[in-house]
Image 1 (cartoon, rainbow, N blue to C red):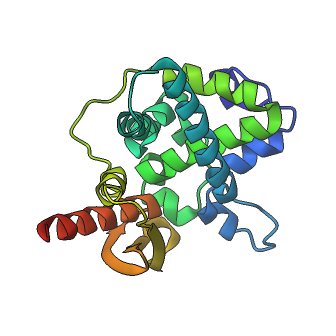
Image 2 (cartoon, rainbow, N blue to C red; image 1 turned 45 degrees about the vertical axis):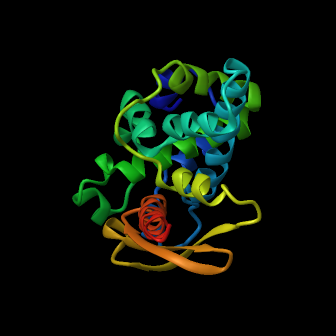
Length: 225
């Protein structure tokens, strides 16, 4: 039995799912046989599951709120800062398997790693126990919290709302480059509007780089009005 299961309040039928959720790419890359999977695919799935469960909750609990307000509420509840608080409650930093370099650089406390691990763990619970079980976990870990009201701005949501004032516009994000070792990567993302690039941003995670690209794009577009 994994000690994290006591914190989660859930016993895995397939404990290998939890192990994979706690395996960072830096750890998997150091395994010479290449047979170890990291948590990146689980992170992708967990992001989708979390967004759906939180969105469903907000839709039912706030029948009078318009789409824009619901979008902002959901973004504040699933943002990196909110997930890091969950990771701290779960003490995920004590359980994530990291490569040697990532460990030396303090990866156990890196916000992007912790937030991604939360999403991966949620995906593991979903695959192992189904939607009802992951809904219970999300309810106890996230939905019970007070919605953040700080000054952190979701630039991607703000940019989406800005361009949707006129119908027919499409935003897309693209990874331009990633540089540095696994424990100190820098990502560059570009955001395009209707196929034309309108901003670039850097960050230590793809999500952070997307936020910075959206911030740059929003500033440029607003200045042209």
